[in-house]
Each structure stands twice: as structure tokens, then as C-alpha cells.
Length: 320
Image 1 (cartoon, rainbow, N blue to C red):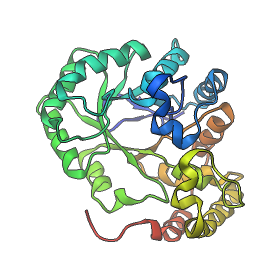
Image 2: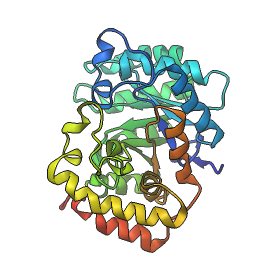
Image 3: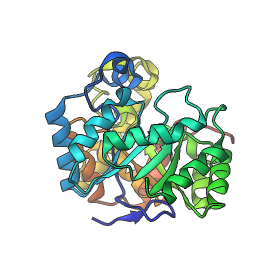
Image 4: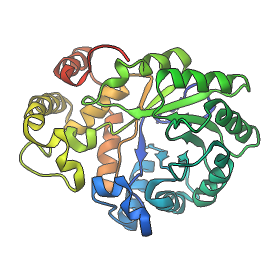
């Protein structure tokens, strides 16, 4: 499996990762986390173990979680399953929405305790009460102390990325990644400056929800309803679902040429961009193996262009 540097950091990663937001057995208020409500919860220890093993067997070694997911349940499960493996572990600060800048070192140590180690540590949301320059300084301290290997951010705008990049650069630490939503059905990074800033600064765009919460798998255009609150979102009902039918048809048409599924083609569209690394979720070994299949073929330029044209309606007009 070919590895690539994560941005300009020394961390070597595959071109595909795994999102583990729903993993673990949440208790208490952790059971009310949006990921559990939206996606119908986890499939359990054995299924998650199968997902990790299938991913590692395919060379997909990057696993992404966050302290917030399930009140730490996702980190605990991932740490348990990844112990003794070659998995690359990425997680995010903070553990609660109202955390302040100074909470980072304590939250980081708690994440390390749950996971066993942290390779990529990311700031989850750019809240106004968290100083980006001060936080980046604390994260640079963590890199220098050997507590983490690379620094990333998540849900940052282009301007916020530049601020974080500049603060880290003063310490000689690269900004490795910005994790944002990006898929054929969510193309805002192409017009809000984020993708351009990633290219300019040498930052990897880690794409979460690369299958648009499952809409791009094709299994919901024939009447099947998704679990959880996803069923209430535009892509799964009414005119939104109708608009999705030709997109799925094109994904199937292209996939048929390679013996690949619509989901694999949708992931491959992202992978063809060297600045983008998608992290689809996987609740079980079957899903993990299907996701990994996106690494074993390539799209032709005319196929990439056809997918671009077919999803222009999901590419907002205008700038930031």
C-alpha cells in the first residue's frame, strides 16, 4: 500500500482512512451524541473488531475518532482494538463544547490514556472562546514533547487555517490537515476557499461524510429508508432523493466498467485529488472491505469530469 505524507508532516498515511464516530458502548449522556442519533448506533465489539481487521488487511491504517464521540466511548473502543497493531490513531480536542484553550493538555492526556497513543491531534471546532494562536502554541509544545506526532484542525475556514498555520510555523511545526465535510453532494470546500488554502499551505483535506451519510451508496434510491435521523435530511426524501437518482445511476454506470460499487466510485472521485483523503465510516468488516476497494482502481479524466458535471447542483455558487 502506497503511503503519503499527511500534509507537510512526517506522518505517513494511506490515501483512505476510517471514521469511527459510532464505535464503542456509550453510557449516560454519551448515548445522546448526535452520531448515535443520526446513524442508529454501533454494531458492537465483534463487528467493530472485524472493521478494524479488514481495514488493516487492506492497508487502510488511519482511524479517526474524537473525545466527544459517545463521551469517550469511541476512543476507548478504538484504543482497545488497535493495541499492538500498526494503526495510525487520530482524535480531536475538546471533550466538551464549552472547553477553553487551557483545557487542551488535560484533554489530550485523557485521550492518550483511552487510545494508548495519539498520532494526529486535531482541534474539532473553532469556537470563538478558544484562541487559535494560543492553542496552536500548546499543540506545538505537545509535538516537541513527543506526546503527539502531528497537528490538525477540523471545520476551520480558510482564514482560520491560515491563522493556525502561521502560529505553528513560528514554532517550526506544520499544520498537517483540516478535516471538513466533502463529497460529491457537499462541494463547499471547492468554493469557500478551504480546498485552495489546503493546496497553498501544503495541508491535507481530510474529508468526513465522503459518502454523504450513505446517500452515495445507492441503496436508498429504491425505497430503502436509512436508520436514525438521517431519514429526515434532504438527500433521503422528496425532491432531494429524486435529484440523487441520476447521480447514483452515473456512479453505477462508471462502477460497472471496473466491477466497483457506487460507493467505491464516489470515494475514488475524492482520492483522485492528491490534496484529499476521505475517511468513510465503517461499522463492520463488510463495510470496511467495500470502502478499501476504492484504492484498487483509478478513474479516467472524462469520468471525473462527468461526475463533476452531474453534481454541479451540490456545488454552491459564489465565494465565501
